[in-house]
Length: 196
Ligand SMILES: [Zn+2]
View: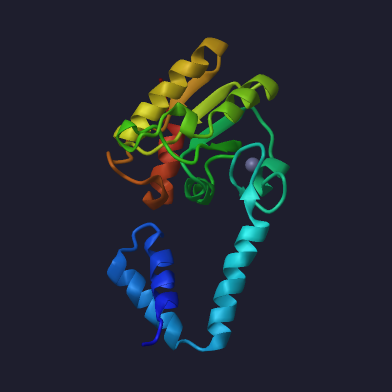
């Protein structure tokens, strides 16, 4: 009997990706079996290249190929926009309404998923507040339960240091993912941000 463990291994790898169930993982694996060698090589090269070259910006936590990301390298300022993940940076950059720097949390506080304040990128934010003379944090986590809880936690944490803390204005529907919000909505939400 032939040993097809290698296909199962590949299926298993795909099931670890977000949003991919067993059936989809199976389809991906079979597709790769059917594809020619050039595709597979390109696919593997792309995976390895990402792992070898992309890291996190030491200042803001955004994706970067250098120690500091493109945005940190060319911007300073005392206003920092806090987002859940790098996709949100892209969404806000597309709106063109913000020209400060970002801070990427890589998650939100979510007791249901056993994610507390220590599990997100908060310690380096406190260092930045101390070292960069930050005057305002705009908290742009999603308007859902975890996003709100995270915003409130950060506000309580940093307010004693005198930093102004604001939140994106309503206009983003509850449950909207920032990355899917249109540019006009995002610009307005930034412009009309409210104190928390
Ligand atoms: Zn950065």
